Image (cartoon, rainbow, N blue to C red; front, side, top):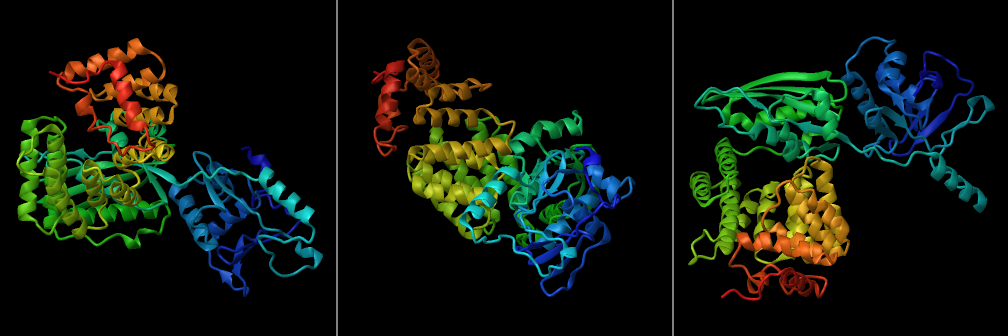
Length: 552
């Protein structure tokens, strides 16, 4: 936006003195001074710079005011950090009671704009008293015209909260401690920031793809559509942990904040909390008072074992499953008051039961359910407790309870795309196809570099919806299609009448699963699949694609 279009405070061109009333904050704005007062006339205390920022916005209602304009008009062209403006914006929102950012909106990569729907008047006309945000006019026609004006003239797009991406911390530890912490600190920061609606936090599955740090910060910000990046390093010597952290404006690479933490390993969670508080403070968000109290230090050991187990399972085979299970069982024995051992063993049992690695004499899913419910009793505010129970009961066929816990897990940590992708499966089986697609698109939004599982689930949802062209488009974008996904591809080709291609996909699947047949496929297509007839449609597609009725 050209600066000449603005009537900033330095120009002083004001013919009218306007007053606006904000009902959310119960305050009144005098545009001539940028001053706020309550209904009794008492001044609302604002710093001079904050008052000038508000005045500049109010003199240009509905227009996007860029950061460079604020620098020129409020700070006289002096070089100031972006955090100075961000703090002013936060103070204004707090004074206006604008928690939802409906009045003072952030326009990503551009600046800020103030939306004023209030009526205004010129004080020189002798009129007094505050004016209501919504004026009821005597004429019904006038009301219609007023509503039409607002609908046409005012911006409608809510830019949403700032987007933060937390990059994996570089591990500077010396052997043998290198890798011991894995991504514990980074993941903890992601999880805690994601609890608050004031931030949109990029999923670790996307942000952790920039592990080597070889790309420019601004390029990473563009790829992830992030406004801010958190990066740094960690160093562990066996007893003590040093964490350095930087918060960076992703648009211009400017460092907004840096700090260093030196603590014992038992203070891992406290370090995470302090980093989250400081990041939020710099971004102008006074939201951190309700961070949960942390568990005892021994909980750290269980959490780290769980992360080591997950690292082992990146190479998915029976030997690694046995090693990872042993780590999780150690936590369950040694830290029975921590939820992490119960969570870890339950998830391992679910994976093992699917692969046939659990003891056939034991109902592995029933055991997993008991462990997951124990974790939930210990830590009802831990999103992983809900996610684990959802995984287990979904495997048991209870999609309704699974959805309850997936939803709660997503509320507690909306940046974990894995939760959202997993939630889509019971949504599909219960016939909530549109909701499944909505959830998967939400996962896409927080996980811009999403992997094949998300594309696979979208393909399945679009197949169920009957939009098979779109489903095929999603699945053909997979980089390394898992063997079971070949069945979904075959179903999509059958839906589109492309029989030869469907049979090619089924041949790929049967080559890897030679003992599979329609009888065993019935376990995947339960009779309770909604809407009615969907299971029959799936099995018919499998048969048409060449899956045998029964193996000899």
